[in-house]
Length: 311
Image 1 (spheres, rainbow, N blue to C red):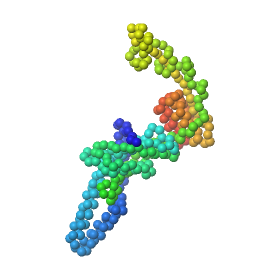
Image 2 (cartoon, helix red, strand yellow):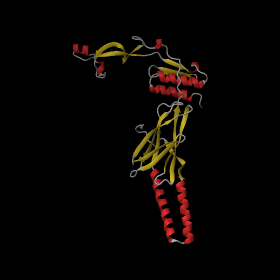
Image 3 (cartoon, one colour):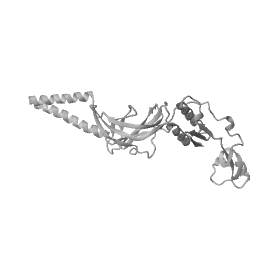
Image 4 (tube, one colour):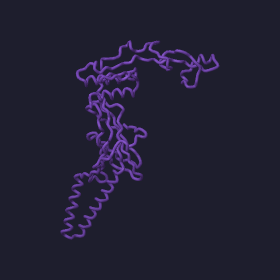
């Protein structure tokens, strides 16, 4: 499954190059190639055979050319990691991993990105001035702030004798929320707004019809009262009140469950369950977060739960 990078997300803001960035690791075939070259070199010196000198020269030239090509292949290839909005303990989360080839003239081949304890993605080709990306599923075992850690970009190009790599250290952290665990604690049905009750005087589209008034141009077309408009010279629109549910306050200390982690898990589930339907608040560590609705408010509450008791 492909992922989408946020516009303007950039690559250079989130990482810095590690102090020992470049590395070289030989494969079995590369080690054998070096040994053969050395042995032929000794043989050429001892025997004075010109043909052996030519063979050794060709082997060394081939090694030099492929080495330069391999180093240039991973040059100016920058990593990026984009986490999802919500990450929960024990639930695989999709991270968008990308490689950006900033070279102007040449593509890069066999680019491998390794991050998060050895999870690896291989991009066969990264075209010049382009970005390739893929999702990987990552599971975290504990809540709180978790650093991205190191990202290694490597390639065996062109012949597989050596693996050349750069190591980057991401200067960002992700916040892992408690594992959501279903709770029996729910708002009572009496708290939900009934017809004609719980309405405020702000105009909306979810409450009952409160009035009709002339069209001002800012109302959506579906709000026009066509029957009344047909009898009048002007367009008439419907005015609704906005239904407001009773706020639901989650008190962490009063939740059921043995141990703080169970209570945090119940609280996380309640936040996810209700924050899009009604105002949700949270009592935690002697503080009370005011009840609000919406995804962003839910994430703010989950962050409070994730950081609870962690210095």
